[in-house]
Image 1 (cartoon, rainbow, N blue to C red):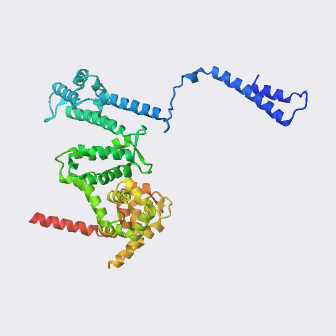
Image 2: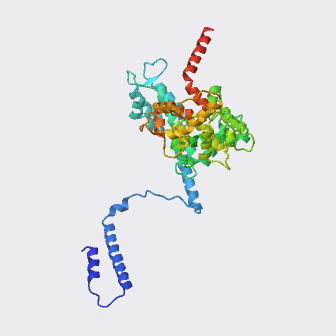
Image 3: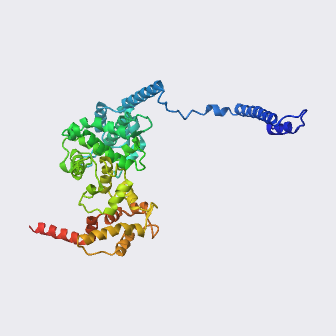
Amino acid sequence: MDWKEILRRRLASPSTGKKSEQELKDEEMDLFTKYYSEWKGDRKSTNEFYKTIPRFYYRLPAEDEVLLQKLREESRAVFLQRKSRELLDNEELQNLWFLLDKHQTPPMIGEEAMINYENFLKVGDKAGPKCKQFFTAKVFAKLLHTDSYGRISIMQFFNYVMRKVWLHQTRIGLSLYDVAGQGYLRESDLENYILELIPTLPQLDGLEKSFYSFYVCTAVRKFFFFLDPLRTGKIKIQDILACSFLDDLLELRDEELSKESQETNWFSAPSALRVYGQYLNLDKDHNGMLSKEELSRYGTATMTNVFLDRVFQECLTYDGEMDYKTYLDFVLALENRKEPAALQYIFKLLDIENKGYLNVFSLNYFFRAIQELMKIHGQDPVSFQDVKDEIFDMVKPKDPLKISLQDLINSNQGDTVTTILIDLNGFWTYENREALVANDNENSADLDDT
């Protein structure tokens, strides 16, 4: 009989003596507890399958559980060491190259050696257990392109192996700084990683140690600006490996890196010194912070006051002034306006009503400041209606009356639109783009004639 029916009958039966309301409630609870426990116990015994479910949650040790924390740290260290030993070392990579070269399949394509699938498997058998993961049909098919003999390039395959080994080495290296052991790095973790990386980068040999903290802050800020858009204060190690920033940083190992490459690399010494030097030049009162008036001299000093007001309203400031870290976010946004993260930063400033879209009102709000600057500089006024129509034509938003952040990103015109609204020099360049192109062509023709 169902336990609920038993309980119902027991309660419905006449009592031999009068009981108080509290006694009845206690009796009801006792009966309920008894029959529920019996039912639950029977159910457990009939479901032995539950006992076979593996444990999937392990709580992290609390701060006061010192022994458990130490045990966890040591076990992670042992695990990472084991993973490191599983990777190919330089001698094993060299041996792999010799085996591939020995088993190449003629004819060569120019100077490029090729290998077919049969020889590919032979090399896999001789290369050792560490290489087994690379010698699969899937890898071969991935590298197979248009060779009429069905072969792959030995150099391409070897580069593939090298890249995989490098990624695993780097992941292990980054994981050593993952204090929480959860697959992500906090800002302080990444700062420690880059600080200890500096001595291994020949291109940074000239940096004074007193500048190290500013260099680390400059480098770390790029990772967090682009990889932590929600500002959670942590980045997945997987995301760090997937982006190109680490490649740019480790490019500084090249002692013969060209001057041009250094200038375009955010992590190079000249680039870091340029950004920090600009910050110091803007800081006229030398208090280590930037006021709105000091920031207004950034670049060509033609950004509108309305836009600068929004920067100081939305960004983190201290007594109304901006520190170096906040300044770095500002610079990264303005120097990378084609990137989604930079557009997200600027879009938040333009979205004065915090509605998640730009409408005619918000566009007019910012463009009026451009018109005022044009009057001050003696330039002919431009109709807002014309500019508004051009912006909507460029973006082609889903809603003809609203421009969302995604609309800006999808249009590939986000950098142009934002420049028109916040910077007089940028707007003037856009308005006179045809004349500037013609002038460049004329100058090129004159150079050709000479």
